[in-house]
Length: 132
Image 1 (cartoon, rainbow, N blue to C red):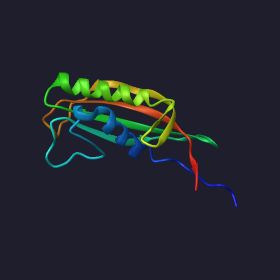
Image 2: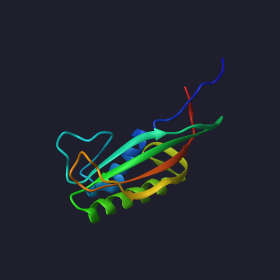
Image 3: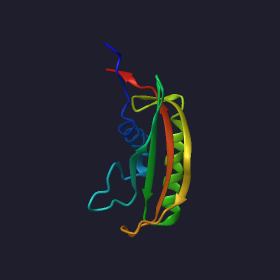
Image 4: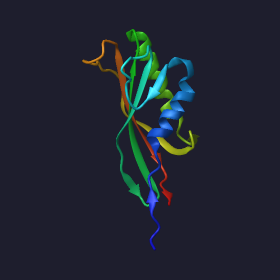
């Protein structure tokens, strides 16, 4: 039987990694925004990826950061971005990230539905699929 390789769950790893790294800077790091928005919110979404070889896969992750004012939202996004890039060559919440690169840098991205400043960025993590 052919060995089946499955892409690891980079989304869960990124959320747990950012929760630990950001600590008290973020009131919540999750995949969705709750009905009552916390002061400092980080949302992580898996927005793409591709198998680049037999033992190489990528996960494209978009990170959105809200806060009560522009300077704090920007700081939260820039700090989260730095952590996501620092994952290269280390284990991030149980997932070894071989390489991390910016796809779209930190940018002001106003949210029409939430009356708080929002900044976002997108990174790509290169990871190794695992046998099942």
